[in-house]
Image 1: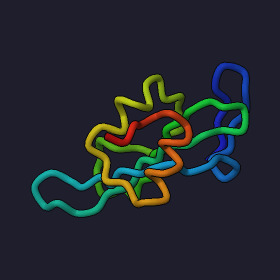
Image 2: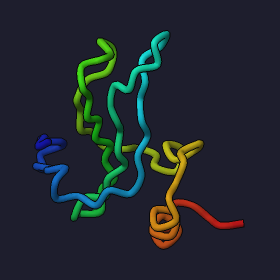
Image 3: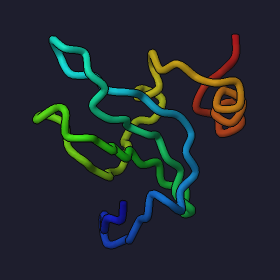
Length: 94
């Protein structure tokens, strides 16, 4: 997805995917899309939501992530995602 934000043109295909969170509809619990935490080439953290139309409250979007640390709370991470997030200083291993 391409979007102009604050005068800069971002393309989700050119960003590094750091982590993701799946969305499911309430009630039927059907998969309705995924939000990805991205790192743009200029160092901006973005959230890209890619939906499949199963939830009328969820829509495709690309926006700046104001607080990636907070967004990561409760997200299941694969080992390689965890290592990259530690490298970027977004999470700390304890």
